[in-house]
Length: 343
Image 1 (spheres, rainbow, N blue to C red):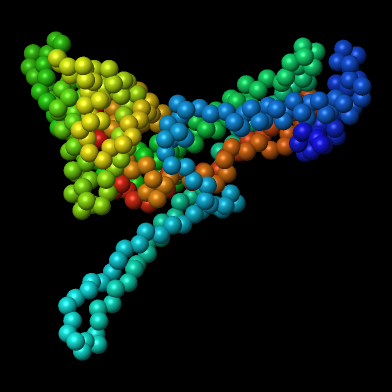
Image 2: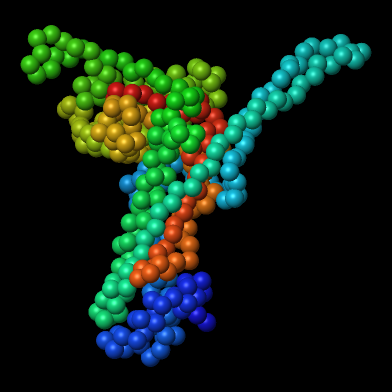
């Protein structure tokens, strides 16, 4: 039983690269066959390590519901949102004109795009790997995986207007925006008080008032249908709430919120929501994101997870092409989530 990819093995064996390595006296290969098998196995180990690599700091790939329901060959995916039409009414015993109730579906189409990159090894790197008795450097593959994951994560937050991919901060995604309450504070060097919505200026009860206000806002506009269960905050604001104690108590503000905010079950720290994450957060403000963590409400659709193709031999280098296909966020129920800018 061979523990290597036969496509990689065939590409290596058919190249002049392996013949050159096999003929090197310093590398001590018995034959072209043994050289080819060695590097095919090495490459498989790199691919396995790279594919399994996880990067939890990429919040969308860690916290958002992820689905792969669409075929990887599709260019678009269409889903329907349904509404009930018609109403029941009081009737008499001999009624023949019963009111008709039906459902009406509205189609929504999302584009699917490929995210691609590659990595490779030149002949000297392969010589050095063999002579030193070390494996091929898996960090190149990990870098390719990281770059691909980063782009998918960026699309999940910022979207891609050019390719019509939707993210949390995309225009026209129908996610409601909540206006935070403000407090008057005199800052350092200020001669008069100014209005601030930022939580660093607010005590625990006003922060909880903001959170409950957001929940009541969603409750009102959805007639109590939607009850978001997840609160996501910028990383350093999450840290502030987790460590800042309420005066004269041993209770942190985050503990206070967890104990008194109805419906919230999950509390998450996302660096993409902070004002300094300009590549994914174009607002320049710290953003609160409250949502229902359920793939029935929304999901990051990835028809083709990170895939590494058989290697390609090009002159004195072997290259591994990589591809991911994504539709960005598919938001079935926009009112299951809410954004609040300037926390």
